[in-house]
Length: 128
Image (cartoon, rainbow, N blue to C red; front, side):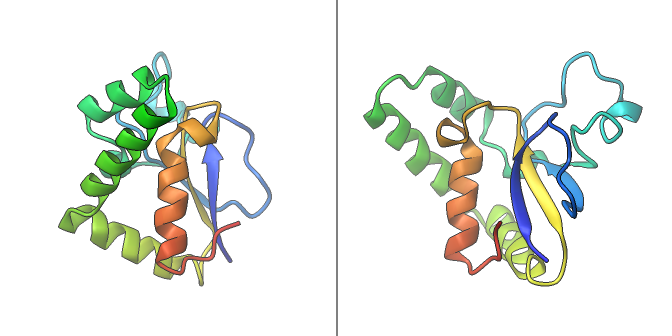
């Protein structure tokens, strides 16, 4: 049992479980009925995505200091009560269930899912 961090739209891994889309917007041009079938996500959960302003900051970040500023701001958003409780819940569930979270970004190192990975690990989640 474990939590996996994935790129949405890629083929599912064995025992990946439910795929949760932690993105601000669903994929463009894809009908709702196709989200799961086309390996996007089973559940859309934008509450674990950066706010629209932070998405823009992340996409515009060219330097390491700009990226670090995004990371700090996103961590602050994820420290709000609703997000914090969701992270705690998913970290606990990772010990007894297979599921995944993801985003569309090609490079995880420059994606909010890298921050989510760290936040889950800090909470003791079982992450593969």
